[in-house]
Image (cartoon, rainbow, N blue to C red):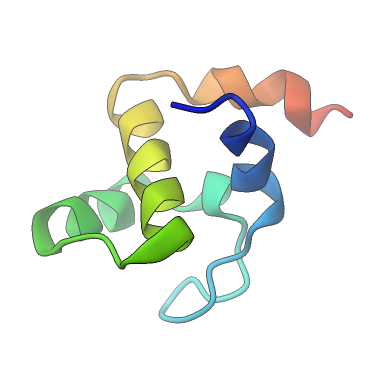
Length: 70
């Protein structure tokens, strides 16, 4: 994990699908799990979704709280 990716989870928005426009950090766990089962999209979006899945799955989403307060 690159620590520079954490702020991107708050600034990048889901470009398509049911949660289009929502910040990646705010995607529900079941949606992230669906991607984990089906495969993450290629490129930076897929990397960030995989990172958010790991944070959510391991109960580490609170690591983003200090970044939300900025």
